[in-house]
Length: 307
Ligand code: SAM
Image (cartoon, rainbow, N blue to C red):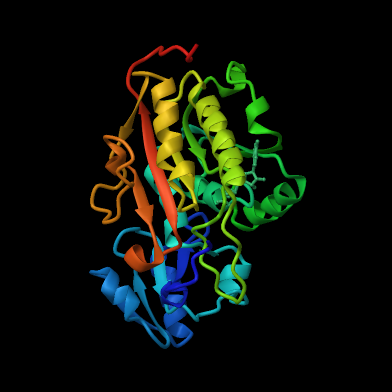
């Protein structure tokens, strides 16, 4: 069931788009608009206590500002000009934890509407190459607008089923990092308005998990891949730990889980030994949407695809 309890407690997170501006300038802008800047938060409790026209710098992510949950910035000039991105904190974790260095070649496999892609471009400082795929033409069109507004260059956006992208194509021979944020049940999404989505049926969960396993395994078959982040906004173990476990088993010793954000308080469910390397996020524990992230790394060069 979509999370509604504690929804009103989730703050308004604002990612500073460092392709267009910097944190200090954005802080000054908001101060001029009458907001009081309280400095860097030391705890999640401080974020929870925010009210009125006050804001903080997040304690975990360097370019993330935090405002009270009822703050609406959709008409703010900084937002309409792409200087800030309104993106939940949990959704900022995948690109941050993938952490490609400038100049890297990166795939964003299920990319639209593109908030994580623009975050990746910012981390790369627009240096390198992003190949972004999405199967849905409407979402690709929206993403084009968003990337342009965010000042993203060096990103090839392709409307294509990622499962049909050939890992052997020389175009991708330097792809060392993949961000995989596939379609999921969305059961972790906080609904701010009325109306909750029904819980996904067992059949739907099974279908989603099947797709997620296929697409994760496909991503691991890119020959130069070193690091991959798998994320969902689902609360269901079937779409999260179970997918990671199944695909890691399929690939034998070729890939391993690395501890995602060691100081993050909320860990993967103990579905298998090592699952605590994954992280989870939730309104109650981390003041974010419900989310899951796993970071995988290649163990050794030249690992063969599973038979
Ligand atoms: N990463 C995006 C962001 O942060 O803005 C959100 C991605 S959303 C959770 C999942 C996306 O996967 C959807 O836009 C959907 O159209 C796309 N998708 C689903 N199946 C796909 C496939 N086989 N190949 C590529 N994209 C796919």
